[in-house]
Image (cartoon, rainbow, N blue to C red; front, side, top):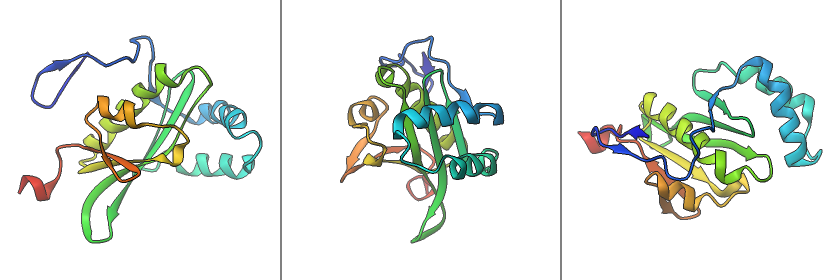
Length: 161
């Protein structure tokens, strides 16, 4: 169960209570690379990804979340036409086969919560992840915006103004 911004308690859709999500730590990098090895089947430069993860893991504008079988990365940015107007973006999302429905929703919820804490106005989810996220994102209030889904985080200074 989680409490929404208005104090109402809502069920956590189909994500099981046992799917624990936490921030990645440096000791999780090799685990994540192993997951990536399976997902990308050697189609990426593992050493470059290792170095990138070590360099970015504590970056304040990024978050790296993991569960037992999935990983999600998000970052903050500003829209070119609205400096200072933070937006969150899904950088990467993957899960071990058979764990998509069980853990991905929890990862997405954790990323969304992080973006809300950072005062992002919107969270943009692209289809570049290789997953059809539409059904999952609709469970947390997502709406289709072209080939991208966006979740409003109730921190939009333009809408609040």
